[in-house]
Image (cartoon, rainbow, N blue to C red; front, top):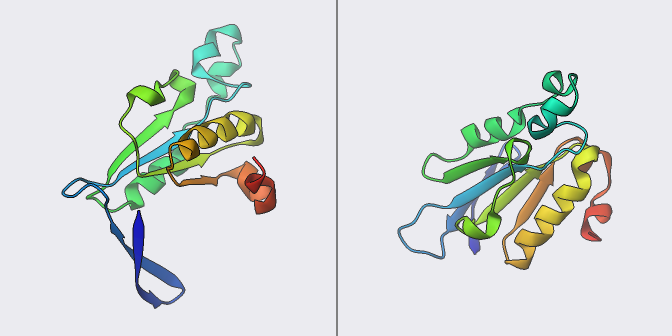
Length: 137
């Protein structure tokens, strides 16, 4: 994957992305990892869980800000376990995580990195810890 610098103005950097597969849309996965504390899959286990399941609103905002020609897939693992090997290979992966989701987020990131896919992590956990912490995982 190559990027070509286009312009810089008002603190914004713009890039032109050259897709390795001609005539195909860039594929972006935005992932909300399983949260062991709260999940709709386990909502029946505790009456409080049905009130504590958070929607990945940040991922929805990012999807809305992504160029319209990109294919964006939001994966919320709290709704069910995805079969990543059966899914088409993405060009980029974005992962959000609370600290309670960090271990699963690292596992998902490692899986995609092994495939050579660039991964970006965000959310409360990533904001609370230094980048050196993520480089060691």
